[in-house]
Image (cartoon, rainbow, N blue to C red; front, side, top):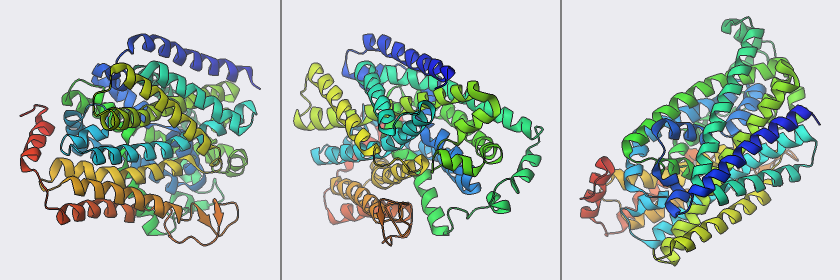
Length: 509
């Protein structure tokens, strides 16, 4: 066990626990617990969004996917980045103006119905669980590699840490952990990218030329079709990535941590630049790992390729750089899972307990207690599920969360803001049809059922051919909302007028 690794890990953990300690002193009300009192500036929230968004899937999963599959791995980078345009132009400002703590608040600004709020909360918890599994799988693989401990112990360590951040520090601690992590992640990625380029004499053309023969795939490495051989599968994946961000509850929740819509827009601009620069650099991470580590070494460490970036750091900078990169990856996972736990807990404590069970009459003390119990529950469930997903690529796992978000949440968000006739029945059918179709199609897809023994959870011929069902489930979500609206005669034009004015101006009529 490397002493440098231990020291850097302890520094990262100590720093985050110190933040949590000071944040706990400032977290007394539900507003402070869920949204940090709405006091973050544009650049702070932009960094926090980046810290939330650049997850284990981005740092560990995409680097591994590019190193093993070349261009097909870079599809994740393209999709994750362009998705922010959807957030910026369609969702960010209306969401900030209409919501309070959660996505369900925003939808209920137009449809004041318990069943709508409950369904929105169910969607949030489902997406959070999918996303959490990905982060915990990445954390388990990372700590297992570094400390040579059992996978289940590694997952448990991360689970305990993230629960402490949320229960004691709330959104304030989570935000500052994410800000510091974003800075450290960008620093580590820049260092590795610089070292990779130096090996190619700072000549990008030389790098691409070398990569034609640097892997067993040959020239095919630089062309699409290595992993995603079916065009429909590729299109389906890109739909999930492009549209999913605008429905992710832990990202949407960040727009409630600023004081107004103008600051929310500023946050997205900051985040887009930071995220964009990072995803361009994933090319250097993936190419470097493929060229200097090798696919066999990457796969022997982790079958899904999740350890490509730390292994590349070791080759380029020895144990010191590997220790720094691994500590940053650990901070990455802690920051993201803390945000996920918070969004899942708010869905239960605020929406289900506070608004449905208590009918909006819960005291501050009751709401805080419910939020902390919910945080604990989300953490425990995610840890248990992550123990069975050790050999799945974290980028793939996150793409499934994006699929559910794009299918179940985005249609209702768009129609709530922009369709006058949209009603309660349409909101219910849209959310449920998107949620159920995406989960059912994933359950019968090649990711769960595979003819190759050990490649998935079950052996056999998959019923649904696409690895990501967004191509079908996203239209089902949109069409389900339309059908539900048309079969119901109920509509409220006055309510829509109020929502339209508030969504665009932030003012109530």
